[in-house]
Length: 238
Image 1: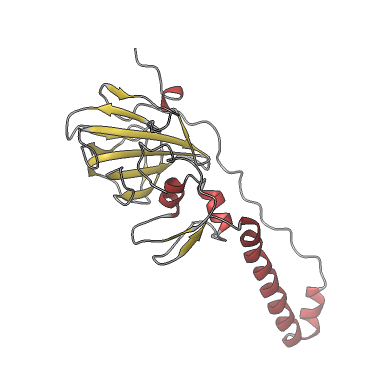
Image 2: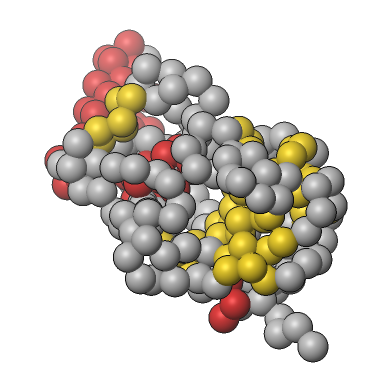
């Protein structure tokens, strides 16, 4: 798998093999590289929220059904064993409580998956459009002067900051809700850190030419791990 954005493979989901986590990588950046939705990749590898991974950890792209059920079985087994030990050592009152129906599990609020109010991430001329052709760009390129502002296209949280994805240079990935992510590549300077909450229109980087020959912002949007044409979502310029 080659993770250069101009290549046609980019955005195509890899369904076999594995990846060993390197320092600085996040589950989001690995999912981005291999065309996965981060939630599916987490389930496949038994990784729960907040999706913490570690250098040297192996992330698998196959055997999802077996891996997904293992953590659940292990948790259930552990809980049963612990419950039995507590009942044996706590006398009749504990045994009486154990026979009561278990409390219903806590329910979390519905995940945020709705539409995102997008805005342009930079001023400047549109240099290249999104394309599904072989070798096409899976985002758009916006021209500009070195050092000009790059802004968050919508409110969200920074889930990757680094230069570990070949062909993207200095890259930021922002999670907007459970389904939508955006990426900002080739920056000169990154102004936010992983974990930062950013507002729509907030300056997050300065435009540069890292990983490319010309000053530009390469901008991508993904829904459930798959590239989407940003021009179908951004406001039309007058």
